[in-house]
Image: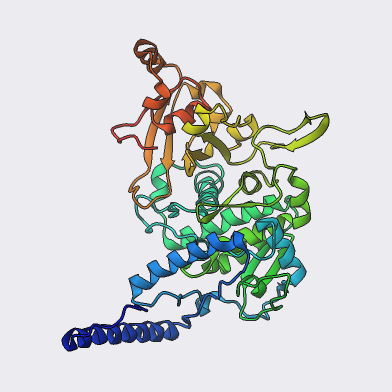
Length: 464
C-alpha cells in the first residue's frame, strides 16, 4: 500500500482516494479469479531471525513486488498456492513424508532445516515450447537457479526422441519439430523416469507428489514451507510402472503452479536415498545447493547425480586420493560413462588457470549429447549420429546442434565441426593476440572435446 500522505488540495485528495479504491477493487477482482480456480492469495509468512536468511527475504520481496505490480496486487500478498488439479488425493497409496525424512531432505539440500526455496524455484516447472513448432522438443529454461536441472532433463528428452524412442531407426533433427502435446508429455515422463531409475541404481525409484494434507507441523528445529510437509512418496521397483505413473501424473511437473522442478529434485534425492548421497559426497561438499546473488543454484553433485546416477562433487574420472598437509583426502569423481555428457568452459576460470578438467567419462558419453556449462550458464549440444562416439572416422567433419533454453532462441542452431582444419590457429599466430578472447565461448567449449576444431555457424550470428 502506498504510504504517502494524502494531498491537502481537495481535488488532488479526491483523485488519490479514487486511485486507492481502484487498487482495492483490482485486488478483490484477482482474489475472486484465484478463488474460482481453486487458488488463494496468501501471505508467504517468510519470517526468520537469522542473519543468513536476510538475502532470501530480500529476494522474495523483490519477486513479490514485481508480481504484485503486474497484477495490481499490493506488495506483501502473493499467490503461492498450488492449483487444485495438481494436488493428488491423500488416499492414492503413497507414503506420507515424516518430519525425520523432511529434516534429512532439507539438510542435504540447504545444510540446515530453516531455509526454504524462494519464489523463483517455487514457480519453476517443465514448460515445453509450442507443439508442432521449430522447437517443439524444447523446454523453456530462462536464467535462474533451476535452469541446470531443466536442461539436464532437456538433454534426456533429446536422447529419448533421437535414440531410444525408436531404437533401430534413424531419427533426424526435423522429427524434433513434429511433436504433439501428448508426445511432448510422453518424452518428459520417459526422460524423468530414466534419470530417477539411474539414480536408484536401476533397481528402484521414488516419485514425490503433493497432497492437500499436512503430515507434520512446524517445530523449533524445523521451518515448514506449506509444501514439503504435504508430500507423499511413491516407490517403484519396475521401470515400466515408474514411467506409466509419471505419464499419468505428468501435469504435476509440467503445468504452471505445480512446483514441478522442486518435485522432481525431491524425487531424485529420494530415488538415490539421502544415505547414499551422503556417501557420494566428499569433504568438499556438505550439501547440494549454493546460495549467492539472491538465489539458489545446484552444485556439481546434483548435475553428476542426474547424469551418472552418483552425486559425486567432481568431474574428473574416478576417485582420487590427495595428501593435504600429511592427511590423505579422497575426492569423488565420475566412475563410469554416462548416457549424457558434460562439457565446461569459462573465460574467467581460464584466465585464472582454474578451468576444471572434465574427464573422458563425461566428455565421451554413450550418446552424442552434452550438457554445456558456459561462463556460468547452461545449454545443450547434441548430434544425431551415434557413430560419432565410436568411430574416429566420423570425427573428421560432422554437425552438432545447439539449444540454450532461452525463449529468445527461435530455432535450433546448426554448427559444422571440422577437426582437420586449423585455420583459426594460423590466424592466431599471425595476429599474436589472445584468440580465446576473439572466439565465441561455444566454440571454445567444443574444442575442449575436439582440440583445434574449426566451427561453421552457417550464417547464424555466433552467440555464447
